[in-house]
Length: 236
Image (cartoon, rainbow, N blue to C red; front, side):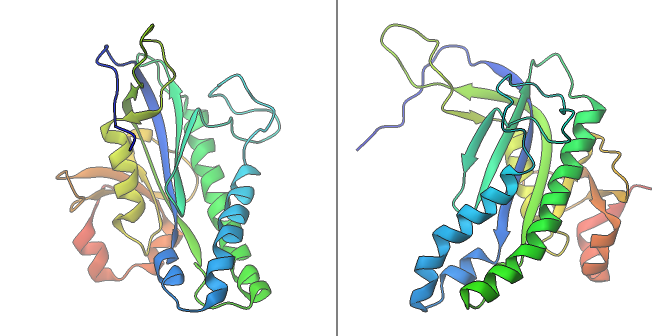
């Protein structure tokens, strides 16, 4: 069995913006006893990521963090698949900041992907004649410092990163699952100024006391007043 091993050399540090996404209701879908579920899952995952890839610039291999003139996002520097979702990383040197243009464009692109997929999933459900297909993708976005994990090598310490660790990764995942009825949360440190967003404070987020967040106002209609009061304080 392979062992988990990483070098003990000083880790490379980066500033990262991390997107965590997953399909809401995927576990319930997979737990059905219908034989058609097993043959549908690969197609569902493929189509989901095919739809996501349409928002990325396929020709960009420069690792740039600047939006392109074609209206598409630069490719993530690192992607970690999580079964029914993914963690996507955009990186820059630790002493630099992501531009406001990039932050706004990332939020707006992920929102467009979420809206597009929500319209596609019911169509796929009818096409495949199957029940309980996930109805939407949930998104969490955060930014902060991450550290590269590198596998050991007998001759050099300069192996390619095989993973990253950092609080902002955990935070993006927690935001993605914090309030399922919202389904889209952005950490306040990203300072997104995308239209239609409201700034709140998440007060019961796992692993922390309070965190500033931004949500889309239209999503707040899907949350009960009791849940809004239990999970958030107004920052406006």
